[in-house]
Amino acid sequence: MVEGELLTTPNAAAQIEAKCTRCHAPLLAAELELTDAGTPSLATLYQPGSDHAALGLDGVSCTLCHQTEDEQLGDPASFSGGWTVAGEGRIYGPHADPFAMPMLNRTGMAPVEGAQLLESATCGTCHTLFTNALMPDGAPTGAVLAEQTPYLEWQNSLFSTERANPAPQAASCQDCHLPKLSEDGQPIVTAIARRPPGGDFPPIGKREPFGRHLFVGANTLMLGVIRDNADVLRPSAPAEAFDATIATTRSQLEHATATLAIEGIVRDGDTLRIPIPITSMVGHKLPTGFPSRRVFLWIEVRDANDQLVFRSGVHDDRGRLLDGAGQLLVGELVGGPVEPHHDQLTRQDQAQIWEAVMADGDGVPTYRLLRGASYFKDNRLLPIGWDPQLASDAIAPIGVDADVDFGAAADTVTLVVDAPASAGPYRVEARAYYQTASPRFLAELFALDGPRIRAFEAMLKTADLRPEQLATAQVQAD
Image (cartoon, rainbow, N blue to C red; front, side):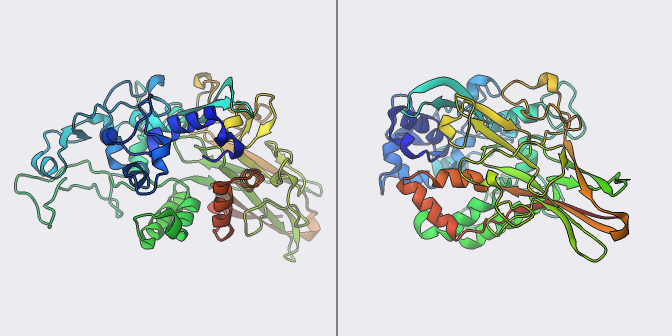
């Protein structure tokens, strides 16, 4: 989290310390310096050579999730990192009566059965995050922003396993992000501990389930940034591990995220009306999480002579959206207007972008997290089974009321283009793309100053900022 001058204010620093280090600074923290609130001290996180700094480089450690007690999980009190760790030497896993000796001897921690490790509510404690909005001087405004809510979105979907009668497609967060099947689709059955030099302990039999701890989502960008700046960021994993995770992430994006179609084309004189439905395959909003992410639609229409007739969503090699003349859309620039939700596209300076854009206390769009008091726009694709009657204000869509086909798991964008039949047939192609950090979000960030902002900007200058393709469709229209 980088907020320019907001980092210098006591309230901003306290909020960052309480929320960010709560989850991303590891546990086993009894020997580390803690604040009065019981969270790791922000100061020790930046002390070169300190135990806290060394552990902090690991991000969310194994011992965070596996020490989480089954207390108030799923309740609002557990959100924003409100997990409980008793610190009594227990490490939870999904298996009954685990053979404890290996872990006790090596770590002093006792393995204990904990069914909560298979429940989405455990993930929801950190991945349901509310942020308190601040004034420019760091004073709280009293407004609270739902910064990320994938757990709440999942609850309002047919993927939810917490419903009284779960649907056939019900799946927990772990089912997707810690898959229990091998790469060739077979259930994983394995011993849960081995001798340090190799080989099995005689008392240990094979168990299931066993989840592959892939934890891939959609963020190929930061994986590449960390890999390419290892001399500064000091990850313990080699470049090959980052390459493998990027490949797995990209595969998930391409095969398990969204589908596109082009269907029901209607000719009206010299005009073609081309509906392009997009369908989400995921159990939360698409995109979900931190409000820098977006999905956008690329469309191209060419005539029988391969001449370009219409395009929207075209982008440069930095992922910035362009108009039909190849100029940057004004919405990609600092202070520019927010691209509205479109039911129809009629001009080449329009682009359909599914995203969440924050608003400050005056209702003005903002790209600075600690200024965010509400959402100016939230037209992100909804999960299958979404019930608007069950959606709280925190997760309700914004800016889509006039679009009758925007609903559970799907949205249809209709391209209206001048295309005389005499120049046909026409080739129509559409693609859906994903970006971890929208160019507009980055432009607004880099308009601020600060050593960490400049350092991040320098890293992104050599990063691959091309958007990731989710789906594609192509048809011929007369």
